[in-house]
Image (cartoon, rainbow, N blue to C red):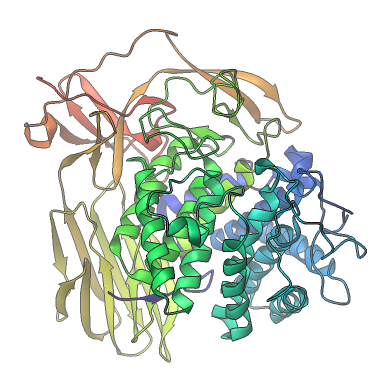
Length: 621
């Protein structure tokens, strides 16, 4: 299979609804205003340092602010919005200015840094939340001062830990649920991997390998130990950790495996990916409300933080393995679970969502609420009464998706289209600058057109992911040598300015099972659901107009939803795909451009719904 390298932030610029959603979220949503809506994003621990994180929540505000700033920098840069570019520049300039003379960027005072007792601490987690926005800004701006600041900070930290100087120390006095920040610290590998990709300096890769080994050596069980290597090598060991940790730790495991030729690590990767699939829903989500437990049933909860971290980890899996399965999964997650857990106007998300959802309110119980209302299923621009983690993480989701729509080939000159959608790619293949414009109504249309504009004739391969759901693909590429291998459509020629490639994917309505025998229905990359009429009840107002917490209730509380049985033997399950000519493809999640119809039953994309039934029972029509 091919392997790939990531492209710098800004090489891929969104068009169509992707750009419209970014712009709308920036101009009207909470994405650019989170620090004005909640003190947790306004609290700047990178400047106002703390003495200790022995109290579990001490580092939380660095997570909130850092993830929000990382997402905001990426959104502003990809959208190219002058006002937001100005604001994010001032925010990252202030963050860089917080660096001490010795290089430290983080959340602890000089007397407290690197001096934590065994157990809970937010040192590496807090540092990573500061360094990742700086790296994002470096790639978008090209200003070397930001890369230099990050390298200086990381070299200081690498000098504090290593063989014989463990970071992951579990104090015996510490219980299972008070190691959250410590376990998050494995995400320091995100910084290290990015630096290694930018510089090729093996100091970063060696420290990353050590960090994953140190994590795996922590005495078990410990909080969120799902991806510790000894657990992965035990064939009967289930996942049971905090779903967010499990999703994000996958990247560290994948990177460690890519750096060494180790049968044990390779076994661990295979085990991790197989188990992960066991806990995932047809919408692409990893279950967990908050911990992983139970089966991926239609009404099981999943967290928005987990959606973001899973998307980022799946892109890493595809880049390193070349397996198109991960591209399929990325699209399923991005176009279904993620859109179905947010309001189309960008003013609120659900902390916890589910595929079938008949109520989205604070009174809906979750695993942490002892059958009482846990507050996680409502819609909010902050969720600050529970934990302000999902909202800043949701700001990262779409930029991460856009930044991985294309990859470059690692073994020869060429590029690969990974996630489909309207965008413009500007990069170099070898020494030749090239621009590729991708025009499509995807995922609402299965036709994609690429216009290739190299500055000089360009002899290289272009690869296009063949979706696993496509029964056939029509390829138009005049003069190109074409073959298909491992799910990739390979086109090779000397590309001239104005060359065009058109792909059209053929498919039908298909069923994907839930445990228990119910089916979800899909067409192309979209899952479809029966929309249930919602009633919005404002439960909290914010200082900024237009922002509220909402309980979303059914029009008829307690009334059972009746849907006809789905006849499995009928072609397309008896449904016809119908286009809506009145829908606006710049805002497709507000009014569905396509629907599935069978008699009086009408289904719309799951991402176009608030309340819905996403599972259907099989039986006679």
